[in-house]
Image (cartoon, rainbow, N blue to C red; front, side, top):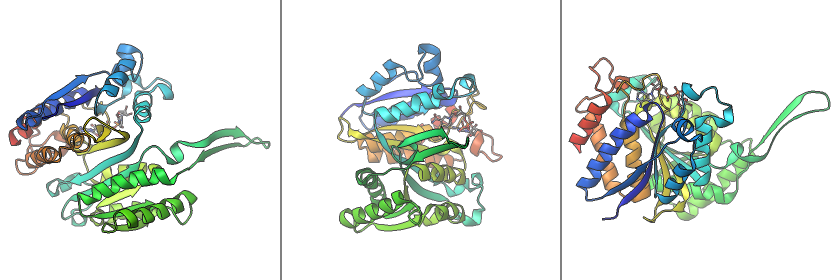
Length: 367
Ligand code: NAD
């Protein structure tokens, strides 16, 4: 059985707390399946700034380059808030990592078990079966990275700023492949979101996606939706979506809306896949909870470890090709939270809450 080699970057505040538990779950699941884990832990974010003077220390980046995937916690918090924007842990650690590994496709499951319907701001009648969709977002193109990007003063004294939205067909097709692979493992339905009634990039997006799916995956049901409508439909009837597929800025906004509709950040995992393949013939990827460092609850042993554990499951699936093992962890989390009713404070709704460690213990038992 091959060894699973990955870099572990816990980060700040609750990052190390939930990472410790995710590693215990991973160790347990992997060893039961005969896989050896080979990982090293390194500083990132505020911890990197405090100990090495760099949010992304050189040694941490070198460790990541040696690995087949990165299991990431989260970075930042009040301790580093006064630093200039460019030196803030999130910007100075995560963005360079995305760039270094060309992490072009973000996969965010929007999963709300029916038993946790109370966590959603939506009325229970709108989500009778909970929520289960996946958002695929292009992550390295579009308006966040397009050039020119300028601010200048006009002759009349007004200031004018400009961002540029750019997409090439190759960029669209490679992320379409991720959406198709995701849909293939689910209900084979993709809703591609754009603003093709206004934007040139969206016209290209729609034409490219349509042609690409028709050629490569004619059996996948592809639909299109304008982004303003998608934002409404997500709160009106999230159950209509299976795979929601979109460009960078639209995905930034819609995936956060999706997270909010799904309730607790403590349950939300994510994966960002790179262009390079790893030693397992799978994409190199970075796997992290969708939430942040939760400084308000850090150090008390009450953070929900599920998002980190589910991110580790995504790593097994996408970067190591261990789909069955990933599904086993996902099932254990589900059983713990739903049938066993073991819940951390963020999803307890009046039940006696379990701590971070107790939740992970219960998940391990269910493995
Ligand atoms: P946050 O996601 O950390 O917290 C929002 C709320 O959700 C808080 O009430 C928090 O307690 C709760 N929450 C989040 N994760 C939880 C968990 N696992 N269990 C239980 N409750 C959980 O967002 P924020 O407060 O806006 O940000 C805090 C810090 O995290 C900021 O410095 C921000 O920049 C950083 N951040 C980092 C990342 C990242 O590293 N990718 C992402 C988002 C925010």
